[in-house]
Figure: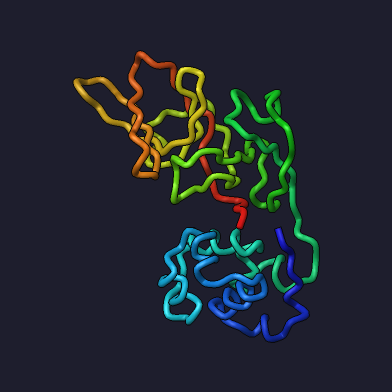
Length: 221
């Protein structure tokens, strides 16, 4: 992640949100098309944000910040990471290439660590690298997401959330929902990619939710 020292640039400090995004985008040699693709934001919407005509949602702001390689506080102009020229306060979390079966601190699959901002760190969290296209366009291959370890949470309590699941021992990252048919509860696992068919999990399958996605923490350009 790129760390800026905006306190040395009075023009940047005095700029609005849209101007800051435009400034950072140009400093990185990115066009609006480049940034919109990296952040998965409609180019027209991004253009309106840069012109100050529209305000981004918190999720959109975070996605733009990740694509630009800065904390979102740099864009909105507040917080410890903006006006003070200091190193970002980060904590290390395990980074996995597949969904771990067990607590992050105990699993044997851990290969490397990844730094996250202090307020995102928790001992029951880990980072997961997306390796498939089933969650496009929300999540792209290679994205790093922050996951909260929540073993055996009931699917009804995480409806609509993206979860790290195990189905018959096989890992999958899908959006979870629940349906009832003939008094039987079915767990429906859906990808955001329309080309990915939903997976229906009934009582004949061994199923568990290992974690719930919290946010996107890194995206390669």
